[in-house]
Every structure is written in C-alpha cells, then in structure tokens.
Image 1 (cartoon, rainbow, N blue to C red):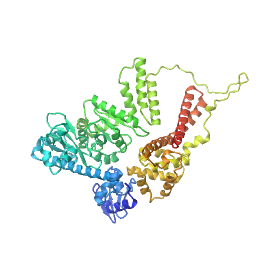
Image 2: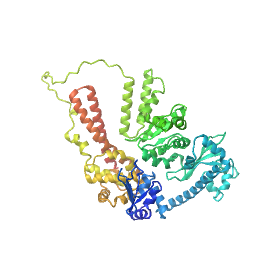
Image 3: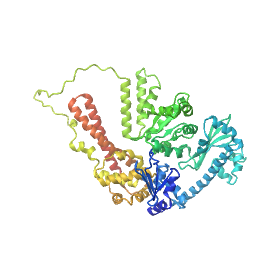
Image 4: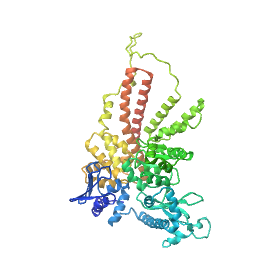
Length: 629
C-alpha cells in the first residue's frame, strides 16, 4: 500500500477539522478560527485553536499540534492506518488496497461487521423491551446506571435457540456462523440446523480499537454454566489480540498517563461507573504477548490490578512470566493487589474512586513482585532451599532477552539475596589513607595497566554523543524500518547526537512515529518530504554501503528472513549505543574510586564494568560482521 503525499493532502482537504474536533470537544467560533478548551491537558480558559483553512490545530498551553490524522491518533488512540481508513470513509475516498487478496479479505470483514453490529442493535432492543425487565433489574442491583448501560451497549439475548437467527435472517446462515453468532452442529457430525450461541444472557459488545463491534461477551442470567461466555475466534475477533474497552481507555489514558488492567469486563464497567475510564481487560485468557505490546503502546508501565485471591495472583504471575522476555529499557509492568475477597466493584462501592486510587498507589514494580512471590514460595531455612531460591530468581532474570535489563535484574536479585542472607561482618578499624611505601628489595611498584583510568576520549564519550558514522547508520536503519522507532522510543530519546541536522531528523522521526503508528518506509518519507530534513533522509537511504544488516537493500527470495535479521540487529544496535556511554562513564568513576581506596570491593566493581564495556564493544563488532554474512 502506498499513500502518496498528494493522496494524503486530498484526504486532509476533504475533512473539516473543526467539525471533526467538535464531535468530542465544544468549539466556539473566534473570527476565522475556532477555540476550545484543550482536550490534551486540563484548562479552564480556551487556548486550543483550530484553523480550517490551514487544516491544523494548536494548543498554546501544552503545545499539542497536528492535523486531522494526528487528531485521530492522539485523541482517539487509533493507529495511523486506522485513522486514515476512518477519515477516508468519511471523505468518500478509497484507500489504496495493498493487493487483491487483502482487498477481498477486507470486504469479507466489513460484511461480518455488519452482522455483529446488527446483532448488537437487536440485543440492545431486547434489553429495552418488556422481556428485558429482569436483566435491567440485575444491572440496577449491580449499580450500573442507564448512562453506563448505553455507553457500553448492553443488550439481552433471549433464552431461545432461534430468536437471533430469525431476527438476522437477512444475512446468510454461513455468515452468521462465521461471525460466531450461531453454532453449526454439522461441525460435530450432526445434521441439525445452526442455532443461537447466546441464550438467556446479558450481552456486552466487544469492540476493536476503532469502536466497532467485533464480538460479544454474555453473562448468564440466573443459574447455569458457564457464568461468562465469549464469542469464539473469528476473522474479526482474536481474543489474544483484543482488549476489552480499548476504544474508550486509549484516549482516556492520554489524559491520565496510565492504563489499568483488570481481570474481566464487568470489573472495567464497574470502574467506569465510578469515573475511572482508563481500564481494560483481557477476554477469558491470561494476558498475552500481543496484549502486553498493545498496552506498552499507550504507557511504558501498565498497572495490573487483579483480585487478591489465589486465582487473581496466579493470573498476575502468568502475566509477569509472559512479560519477562519482552522487557526493554523503560518498559515494564506494575502490580496492584486488591484486598482479599474484593474485586474492583466491591472496592469502589465501599471506598469510591479515591480508595481504588490508594490501591494503585501501592503498586509494586515487576522486580519486587517476582521477589515477593519466590520468597513466599517455601521455607528458606536450609542451604539447599536458599540455593533453590537463588536458582529460581536468576532463571527469571535469564528469561529477559534485553541484555541490559537482564543484567540489572540479576544485580537486583543478588543484592536482595545478599541482604536477606547477610552474615554479620567483623568490625573494621578506621580506614588509613593510602600512601606510597618504600621500595622493597629494589623492586618498584607498577600499577596493573588494566586499572589505569580511561583516557580523555572515553571520558568525553557520554558528553560528546555517538560518532557521526554510527549516527548515520542508526538513522538509515530507522528510515528503512520505521516500526523500530516506536519500539525503542525511550532509548532513542536518551541518545546524544552531536550533528544538529541528524538530531533534527531523529526528532522528526520520533514525533511522526509517536503520532502515526504502522508506518512503512514510504509512508515515513511521505510525511518527511515537506520538511528540511528530507534531503538528509534520502542521502542516508542511498548510502547502503554502511556495514550493518539494517542499512542494506533487501532483494531476492530471502528478503523476509533478511528483514527479520535486520530488525533484530537494529534493536540490539540501539541498545549498545545507549548503554555503552553510560557504562563507560560509570567505569571512569569506578577506576577513580579504586585508585583512591585500593580495596577489593572497588577492584571488583571496576573489573565488572570493564567486562561489560568490552562485551558491548564485541556486540557492536559482531553486528557489523553480521552484515557481510
């Protein structure tokens, strides 16, 4: 799919920005522009302006700035492509299809969405009818207001095997089966007709990030099993890649700078009733790697708030285990535990939103949760039990793929183990300052050359930033693989690039990737084209002679495998560029400290940091070697 600058300009021209913004924010005309209170920060006096002629908005309070596409990504939380598709549908424009097969698949999915939306409308109608009185009473007892009921689209599935099938008879039966609304007994060797999947249940629509109904969850009314029933996986719905309430929680999280993960959708709804809008839930499964990635696209450290019972804590640990291999600098999980026997509904009823916030304030970092779990797993009275604790903890650390994060986890666990099992140290006398001793037997003391302080070049590395060729290789790789920008956003912000033009190009790419998810190389270049950094970007792309896999053009049958290698190498390259200046700065400090104290502890620290620096240098050389293989 190629979205040319001309096509994007035409899309922006067809959208009236003030109308688009006005659907969410109250706008007031002020001359040739419009004003509003900024939706991106709290204010009482309007400082947010919208200019339809120029097609952009700007806040003079917080600096928020963008066009119609940026509004959809920042305020609605959509990916770049989802924003483009929604705006194109409104503007009556056809988004260029990637290929005929993808176009056919998109058409089929659109048809299935018609089915799920029609089912949602019919379920809501049933809830509002006389037959829905018991279900409405149940919602009232749960403290769910009519406003919340309508916001989440609650409905009712009558206790009938054919009611929905009859109501949606305008759709072919195979389509109703494929959407998950009917069960086809023929799949199990029966000749019976397909029948309604959901019967006698309170229905809750499950929506995608754009707010479109893609599936349902149903809670039994009265006795029966299972208590909760979700739609099966369909072409529209993959439970491992969907988070309940993402469409509402994503824009809310931009206001609160947090995202809360609870166990189920009724927990999410109870929190929404209490005014807490930034909560999501998995759908009947443990939190998956894909869902963790979705959470990290909103905030770097999501808050997992599971029940305090055994089942809730097991779910929390399963999420922790899933997250470990994915950890990278700045991105983790935090864990808040509810009081025993309470779920979010119980807590907000008893203590309100403020009481729930107090629980969130006590959230533990992932490293602390792992430590507490393993220490509580069994007795620690014998050497074997203590050794087993150490083995379990270091196994958790070794599951982390990022070398720097893995190193810090191992260090943190070792420090905690040393503290837990510390021996009483003998008292030492006052330290005597070191002074040179007279020579013995004519031998003159010569310091170990390994302990000499780093030269001025090494000391200045962290301040001067990364060298020009390394910066050029980095920028060229990011231009070829824009998906790596958002994944390494925190690390890239920490890099010091001496050349102002290259620094400006990196800043432009970071801003673009943060606002517009799902970009490929062509899409990124289309956005950079009006900027003065565009020529530098094109120069870097043409310079494919740099000695790294991610700077090479991909051609031939093995392009897909080479692409995976290049992305992996680029991630590692960024980690080295960020880590090595910091390690070298600490090495310079450790060497200076050891020359002052000349003790074993100082020597060990100095040697440990030197080994880390040498390992990073080897990794950088290996990445360069990989490009020639």
